[in-house]
Length: 287
Image (cartoon, rainbow, N blue to C red; front, side, top):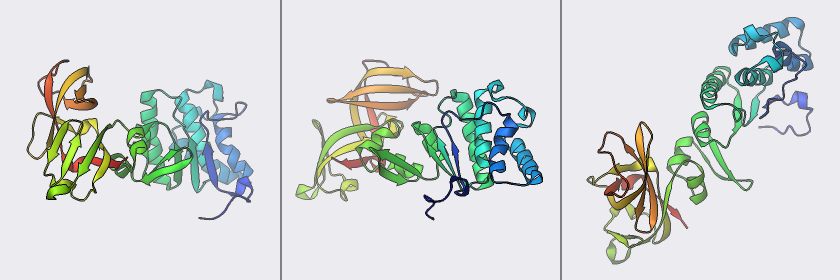
């Protein structure tokens, strides 16, 4: 990298897409996209060719002469991204660019952005409070807490192996249950509330101490399975999601959330069932 703080803004080769787009209302779609090219003092022919390519890339050809107030939210967003990319920046900064859009349009534009980013090869820094958006769009993901980075890594690494309680709770839904681990008498003893687990070789690499046991709702299975830890629970909440059931249950004094495949026997509130979780995917977060 290189220091660009003292450079003129026009020479930094950094594009910016604002949360509210910040398009020029007195200019057409084409004029908005062409604005940065004029600042760069490109020749008329170069501007024409670059504008044509961007209108085609963002499927805006038919809207080139439209006023900004005649555009839909998705059309404005595509225009804003095209304008930011027109000067061929090395880095594109995006400040929650899809936050004002409905779910279906947001999903489509996320796919379009990924395709365009891979095609053009620019680096994008994307700020979002939507966990699903962060996971699906990023190659590397940073979770920030109070102005500092709590963890940085691939989306899979951060979701599956959060470094602390904050990251686990912030990124997706998580079960976080206090527990204590002891390795005395040459065997591992895990205590979760009043429930004890003994002889757990998979825990030998964790030092004795107090932890938060972390696993995701989708990690849970119904009933006992070989090699799994079994938690006896009572169902206190139930939602049918179409593809699955979302269960809220009581395990001792703790609440547990689980996503259960709808192909199983439909659960009911008040039922006492066994939920099983693979110990290989459980994380122990130090308190």
